[in-house]
Image 1 (cartoon, rainbow, N blue to C red):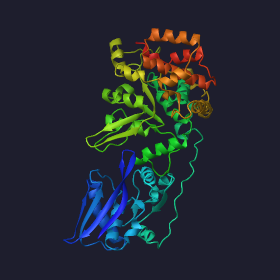
Image 2 (image 1 turned 30 degrees about the vertical axis):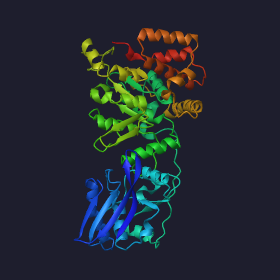
Image 3 (image 1 turned 90 degrees about the vertical axis):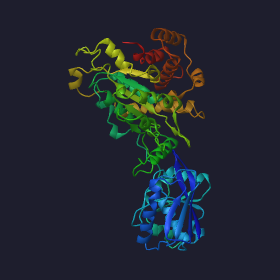
Image 4 (image 1 turned 60 degrees about the vertical axis):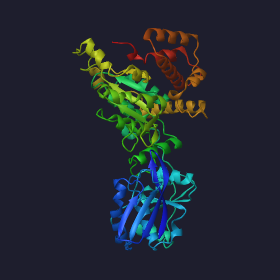
Length: 507
């Protein structure tokens, strides 16, 4: 007897359909799985055997062959347990074959028959809808996530027995519907309030500009000046993601197995990997390519503390995704692409000892050591950082004084206003913030008056700005004008943007 069940496999952050074919034939009782299964798939035979028996059904005592088609696609993970078990029951006559048609089924089985959650339910639901298959059966823990996709009926299963009863129409399950996303109000309470940061008004202003335009930011200052504290609070001033952004973020975290109990991410991600991370861990890859930190930070923030401590080759791997907003991972059998539209916030000391330029503490480093330390950040990478901001050490009066300054909520209102202007400006262009403007948009939306042209010309000559740095100055000036609610970029906006290129001048 032959039975066929539709299931799904993950390819990067997308999914494709897989046919699970179960054939029972004459011969000694044994079970073989073919179709490029990896270890977790091969081990499913033991999970499925125990789950079927412990759910009260007979495991077929015949020669059993299970084929996962297409056979040239490597199959990974435990999501094939449930379709294999249902295919075995259909092939042995417990389930009518026709009851398995018109649906995609995924789920991991425990030994007692419970259905456990799997990775990538949202991507699987997308593939199901794209192929015009009307129904998707997933673990109950994944149902709300999968229901975010319209055009497919999603049902959550808690056990193998429940799945059989549902397919035999002896039990009714409610169709799962998507929960409306809950707004975070524009700020994240876990991020802390910007008003808690003492002093550093110049750095706070740069943080606001970076959030408003999606710009990359480098904070430079001695240990204890508050660089990390500032960076952590950018999550509290970023606007809520749009529904399309939230679904993209959710899909990536679901494939990575990091979604947790929430069916959808409603706040922008903030990722802060340690400097010992590998290049594959940062940009993605591995034998079976998975999204890296740059993709997990998609539509959010990637924070790299102590930037020069990261290996040079790891930092250089950032250059392509920062420019293209996408990571392409090529392997012998397949090339996969992961989205990586993130803001990079980085922090560094000015020198190895950390006190170069500090008026209160003497720097122990020679100028050669300072230059060598700064050269750990390559010129091409530095070019891609829109704002370079110094965060000086605070004096005793600032440290002991009462916390002052605007709250994250107040700053977030201005950032949201500036982002709304940008969304209106770039309607239909696939651009959501100023930092993503192409050279064509730069020429159209970043025209300068005479005074602005003269300031920019002087900066190009004095700081030896590259063509890329020149474009980033214009983008930052456009964001400053948006925060001020002005259509035209003025000379003062250009002047402020130029002062955020501190590291273009050698020590």
